[in-house]
Length: 273
Image 1 (tube, rainbow, N blue to C red):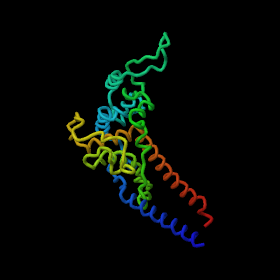
Image 2: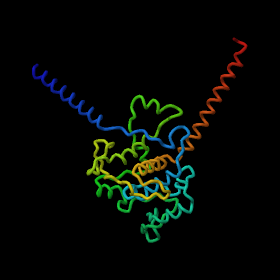
Image 3: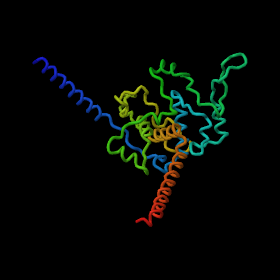
Image 4: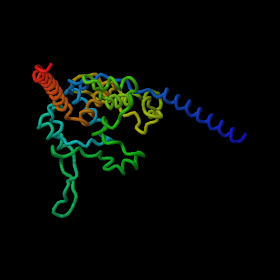
C-alpha cells in the first residue's frame, strides 16, 4: 500500500513538473503578432506593387531552395502581380523546364519555359529526395505555404476573427512574417523566436540589403518579410478578391430576400391579426 501511494505521488509530481515545463515553454514561445494587410477584411484586396516586390524577393532569395508550384501565367492576374503578357513570356523563357513528353528518340529533355508551365524546382534540388539528402529535410513548396502555416490566436480573439466585417484569415501571412523577422539571436542563424522549439532547419535566409527593390522601397528586412508574405498569400489564394465580391453579393441578396419575406408575411397575415 505504501509503495502504491509512493508511486502515485511520484507520478503526480512528474505530471506536475511536465505541466510546469510545458507552461514555461508556452510562455517562452510567443505567438506571431497580428499585422496590417491590405487584403484582410471583407473589402480587402491585394496591393499589386507589394506583390511585385514580394515576387522579386521570392525569385532572388527563396527560389534557391523553395519551389513555387504555380503557372507563370498566373503572374498576369490583374488582381495579383499584374505583369504584362510579354513580361511573363520573357520570364518563363528564362527558365529551363523538363518537358512532359519525351522527344522522337524517347529522350526526356529540357526546354525554355512557356507561360503555361509551372515554376520549375530549384536547379540544386530537382526533387524532394535530393533536397532532403542535402538539407536534412525538403523545404516546403511555397504555393500553399500561407494556407498551411497557421497558429491559434486563442480566446477571445478567435471570436473577433469570425465577425462578418472582420473575418481575419491572415494568420499564415502573420506566421511567415514572424518567422522571417524572428532570427533575433546574434551568432545563431538557426534560432528563431517564433518557431516551435526555437530551432529551425532554415538558416536566416535574408537580411537588410539583400534585395535591391526596383521601386525605391527601403531595402530592409521588415519590408522583405512583409512583401514576400503578401506574395505567398496571393499564391495560396489568387481568387481571394473574386471570392469576397461574390460573398458580398450573396450577403446583400440574403438581406434583401429576408426583407421581402418579412413584408410579404406582414401583407399575407395582415387581415388575420
